[in-house]
Every structure is written in C-alpha cells, then in structure tokens.
Length: 78
Image (cartoon, rainbow, N blue to C red; front, side, top):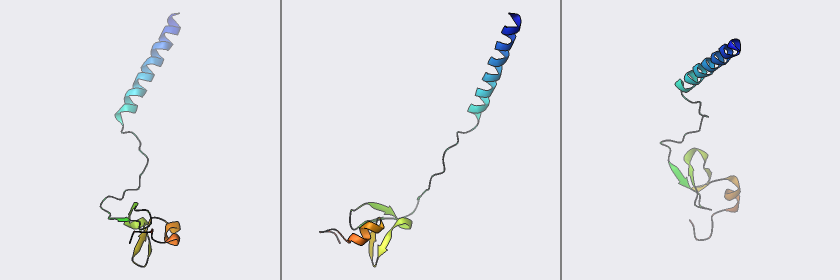
C-alpha cells in the first residue's frame, strides 16, 4: 500500500507541474488574416463591404466576388 501511495503522489505532482507549465505559456491562436488599416469597398451588387485587397473590379465598379461581377450592378445601385 505505501508503494501505491508514493506512485499516486508522484503522478499528482507531475500532473500539477504539467498544469502550471502549460498555463504559464500563452495559448496558441491560429493565424488570422488581418485587414487592419485597409480600406473597405462596397459591392455594387449586394452592398457587402470587402477589403480593398479582395475586391473584384470591373472598370470603376467594385464587386465582392466574380459571380457578382458577371451579374453586374443591382437595380437601383450605381
């Protein structure tokens, strides 16, 4: 019985050390694509705001995707 108790205490101490070390480092976050500081453009088809780097243009008209560019501007929008 004393041997079992020693193993249990050792396992508990190892688990506790692991938890402390794990909580000490910052959590790993997935890299996200940031558009901070980038201007937004509105799609002339649906009005969705899209970052300038992702806009699909046709002349001076901005679209959110290739499908909306093919469909053209919506009725009542410029």
